[in-house]
Amino acid sequence: MRRDDLDVVSVATPTGLHREIALAALDAGKAVLCEKPLAGDPAEAREMVKAAAASGRPTGCCFENRWSADWLAIEETVRDGLLGRPYLARVSRSASYWHPSRRPLQSAWMYDRAQGGGYLAGMLVHDLDYLCTLLGPPEAVCAEVHSSEPVRILPEGGELHVTADDTSALLMRMASGALAVLSVSTVGAHTDHVRIELLGADGTVVGDGTLRETRYAAGRADGDGLAPLDPSPREPVAPGELPGGLAGVASRAMALMLEDWAPAFDGADTPVPTFADGLLSLAIIDAAHRSAAGAGWVAVTP
Image (cartoon, rainbow, N blue to C red; front, side, top):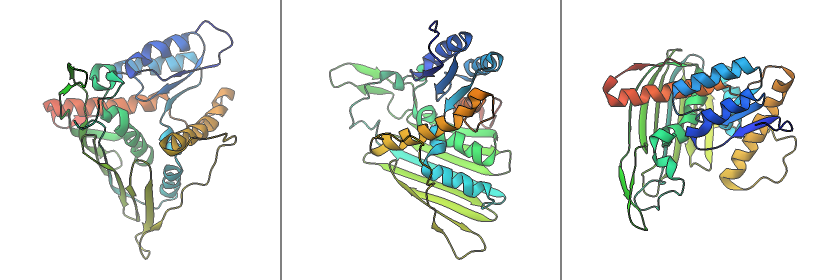
């Protein structure tokens, strides 16, 4: 952080280390791009939000999925009024990553909630952020968050005690009046599925597919039905050699997000998620955990 030839620090460590590194970078006058989730808990995130505001340096939180070709197209369609008054948003994701038939991940911290592990914060957080972008913030959350296999037997012997979640289900009351229903599970043998629905008074958007490819369709209530929704044609200014598969999709989205972040270095506003956006998603996750512990409906207070 003491080097004067660095303009930006990208924080891509395990979540539990984000706060310390980001605060040191801001104190050194660096711009900071921090991975999601922003921090280990809302208190740490609030400290980071305050430090970012005091520093006056550009900061961003990596919700690059907003810039995926499909999600850019959906956002434009919703902004153009397709949904009208929103009724319901529903997201369901399933995968096999933590099924007992699979080898444990090499990144052991992902199994530890104290270090920011789990799939509510690691996967569904992108959907939480995106729905807030489309529909506005939630007022309250009711949820169940748990680990299906709290103890894993390691192939080389020994046990891995799991405190992070593999399965979560959230019901959110949005300030807009809509309801949002989200679920994720990574213990489904042979599963790889994504389902997204946005229902409103004036129209509908639906998506169905896999984690690698989801096909979307949209239609107005007064139309003849749903038609395929073309992905955004936007490409990075300097695409380079993007890898294939999910890595290529993520790299393309990140490149577009960084292009839109560049004006911040000249003091201009940008649509790139801020540390405050990262705090909001953590406030939702914190409310979900408290709800699952027996608190019922919990107000979301960033």
